[in-house]
Length: 70
Image 1 (cartoon, rainbow, N blue to C red):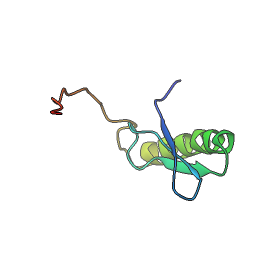
Image 2 (image 1 turned 135 degrees about the vertical axis):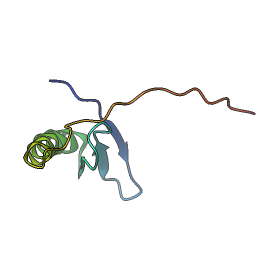
Image 3 (image 1 turned 180 degrees about the horizontal axis):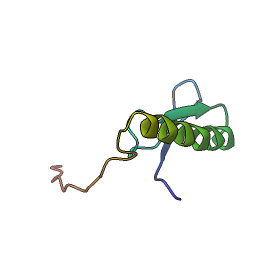
């Protein structure tokens, strides 16, 4: 199963990664590869916990258009 993720490098050069459709599902790593491995584990653990607690596994995301004024 594929999950969307976001990834960025913070001010301390850590790669911060999150799965926005699973509430609270985040991880990090010193390299991009490490961060990607860590988020895979975090996603699995978050799904397990949400199942145990009877919570929905993911939330629905949608797009919204916001005009940008220059």
